[in-house]
Image 1 (cartoon, rainbow, N blue to C red):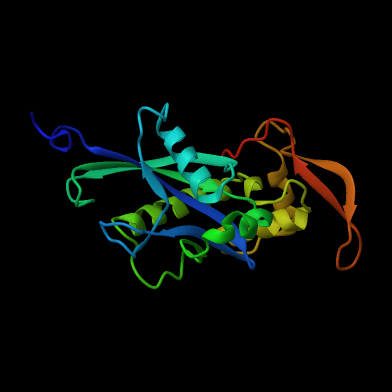
Image 2: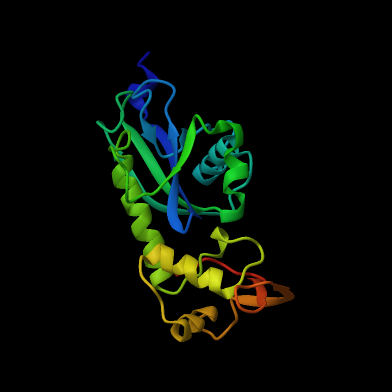
Amino acid sequence: MSNTRELYPIVFADIALFSVLDDRLHVLLVRRSEDPLAGKWALPGGILKPEVDKDLLGTAQRVMRGKLSVDVPFLEEVCTASGPHRDERGWSISVLYLALFPMDQVNAAVGNKIDALKWVDPFAANAPLAFDHSELLNKAITRLRTKVERHALPLHMLPQKFTLSQLQRTCEIVLGRDLDKSVFRRRLKDLHGQELVEVTGEMVRGLQRPAQLWRAANGFQFIG
């Protein structure tokens, strides 16, 4: 009987998980503990398990729960990479997912896995990632920036309650440029004029005066 890996490709879900740390965009990397490419840093990912995963999104969700011990609030398919030379184990297919994670949960999520995981500035990587993950990361960054450029609000990177200044600054960090405050406020409604965020009725102490706290409006989606 022929070897299964000669008949069927290995199927992966790889995840580019972004958050904001120290006023900069960061992505989560995992250090591989096994061959191929043991010791190299890569995007977190895993092989499809048909007996466990109902689809590849389920694979991505399972991988993230295993790495962070929490559910990631946003996952979106970005692209598919395939070929015979991506992985020395055989012909492979990888579906890349863009994921966002709240900035106030970053340190707690990594916890005692700090030796295996790290958050890095995606624009300051010192060495190429394992496999073709550097290329996949660039595609994920482009998708994230394109969505925010099209006025999608990256609320999944913020705490559940946030100030508008925090939200504007998060958009600026993603885009890599400052935004005019009055122009930014137009982003708070969708194309149909529906509010994307709503006031909580709570206040937080600011640098000059108390600031209102906001939250995602009911039914909010990161669309752009």
